[in-house]
Image (cartoon, rainbow, N blue to C red; front, side):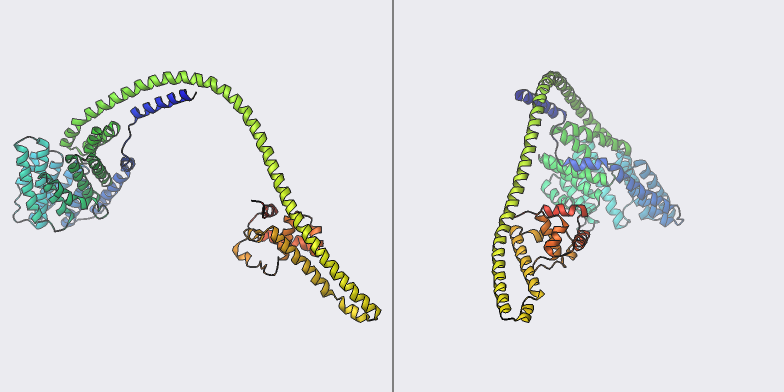
Length: 536
């Protein structure tokens, strides 16, 4: 049976390996965010709707232009069509205001839309139509940065010589121009410098530029963080470090999801890396998501790039599913045979186990009863021994005191000193004898139950414990429950021992139970659970 079970587990394990290859645990966060991506899209839509609502109340063209710019920035990496519409709205108002800087800025918006959708010629035409010489610094920075990206994207898209090197050279030249107008020690400056160094294949220098951005996700927005992480992923892929490449592509994809960016390459590149490492299922999932984003944004060159690897991944996944299906068919046949054998064996074993379980249960119950009985007997013997010893000594001392009193009384009677006898036998002496008896009882009881007082106090709130002063012996209330713990539950017997009325005993018991944090009906059972010295 053990061998059959081993064969069964081996078959299931093989099927599992083929069905779902082990994936990098770092994709867990990405998968979780993918499930929540509608939340980030909704946040962006809420910002857009707020801007549109505020825009509808504006009449001043300068104010409206600011809102159109804000709406373009929300849409530019999210929805191409909407970004294109608001870019033209910016241009229309800028022309009406006759503000050259705002006109150039609007044209840059339109060029960005063309570039992001893969219309490189159209983007180049509109950028060449701009006279940048008299523009403000920020517009010049954006102009040269956009031109650098245009030529770098053209180099990636064409990827043939001599055009690729020409485009990279032009892109680097525009990077230099953009650096001149970019504020020092700003994330934008590090991004531009890192982009240039990456194109020059100075990967160490590029890592030095991008790494601070990727390590300060709380200080930069999610979109800039995603660009830096994606660039690091590309660099490490070029350096042959696939683990780091996958890590940073995952981080870039996380940043894209959080910023609701649809014009992106991180998921596509991540899918390609995972496919190369053998994780076909994850690769297929991510490349389909990348195609979904590209279609939503309408990025033509992104769709072409994704289409180049999607059939390859899909074919590999299909072959893997086919292998899995064949293995599962074989497994089902073997498992069916094993199941029939196991079923017959299980029925036999079940009947034997049922008998064994019943016998074991009976033995356990008897053992529990024996242990409980032994424990009670040991406790009773301990209590009996202690109180017999205490009783012997107490009786001896009591006889000695009676003998002493008898001699004195006899002597007084002979001497006819009757008033002295009355004085000698006053009530305080009887109280003293009773107090001695209680003190002896307390000492013997605490010797048997050294933890009784501490356990007793646990049954009350801390504020109620303050009233329990036992420095001079047990209090009447505690002494009542000490007698109960010894097995004396009859209130009348307790009353006789403590020299109280039965009503007084019942009043004490009710008062204590009402103050306890334990239900009244369970209080005495909790008292009985307090252990003696020998009981653990």
